[in-house]
Amino acid sequence: MLANSLKARSDRHRAPVFVVGCARSGTTLLYDTLLSGGGFALYLGESNIFNLLAPRFGDLGIRRNRKRMLEVWLGSRLFRVSGLDRGQIENKILANCMNAGDFLRIVMNEIAVQQGAWRWAANSPEEILYLPLIKETIPEALIIHVIRDGRDVALSLSQKRYIRPFPWRDREAPEGAAIYWEWIVDRGRAAGAKLGDDYTEVRFEELVNDPRGVLGRLSSFLGQELDHDLIQKNAIGSVARPNTSFNAESAAEFNPVGRWKRQLSAIRVTRIESLVGKTLAQLGYPLATSSGLNSDHPTVAWTRLIYRRFFELKVQLKNNPLLRALRPSLTAAQVDRIVLVDDDASAKIRPRWQTQDWKGTDSQSQGPAAPLLPH
Image 1 (cartoon, rainbow, N blue to C red):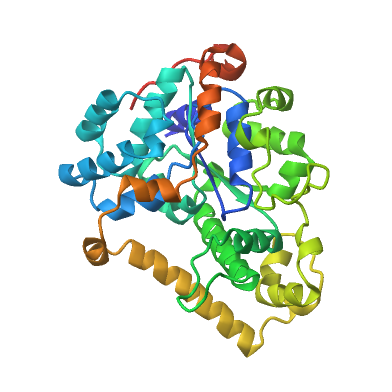
Image 2 (image 1 turned 45 degrees about the vertical axis):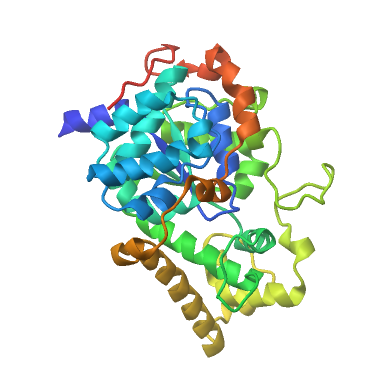
């Protein structure tokens, strides 16, 4: 037992990392920060295996299902930015993939081996809803949950029309988006509480305002030094340019922290804090009103209940085998319309695969990064 524990600690610097959280919470910034630090396989896209592809294809232990899923993946941008050879990855998936975790592990291990990296990370915010399955199929995975002020998240989610609203609405208002944020955060923290030392949380505001402090804590969590100066030098993806939904802001005006104070009306802030104020306060975000401390009004409670049941129902329907059989087949074109992949940046960073600045140093071997061995 002790030997297994010691081995687990020694292997931590090679363990895959999942960066998760509510959409618009800064998961991409943290993910790109990790990639900029060296040692991680460079893949500028949200994997979308657990939350999008796998739920549509059923039991991947059945060869027909995994072949159908593989064909869709190979036809999408998710494959095109990977730099992998189709024949090689196709053979390995068809021979060795039994579940979503196997699929992602095989793909990312191949990318890491090709690049000479010793570990990989995945970035799909909504995979936070699948943490138990992730840990079941990739037991060594480390989870970083990025949490941002729900008022800023609600503003951004509404701006981006990220949440599919009730059928009778054109877009979700910030109030509904705030409940979605709270629901996601609650689900993530509940699952994370069962993961012990393999789970940690990062506040987006601290990542922006005190990156060295956050990187120091994450260095211990990941078993790998994250050098702030090297990250700024490499500056991959959103580290080099902000991933913002507020394109009207100039570079001088850009400040992603506390934007809600400038762009939400006082009435809207009061409504949002009446709905999710207790959670904001529990997470350490000061309230602007007293409404969050008096959120037991029947109308507030009913609104929260309806929204949270709606979000839960959508997840249940998404993973229901009967409804899966009735839905039209998912196509690569549909995947391309949904996923976030930085094609241009991926093409530009490929030459970095051969540079020692990006590869970094394997802290356990005190030498260049050793290739990741396939599982």
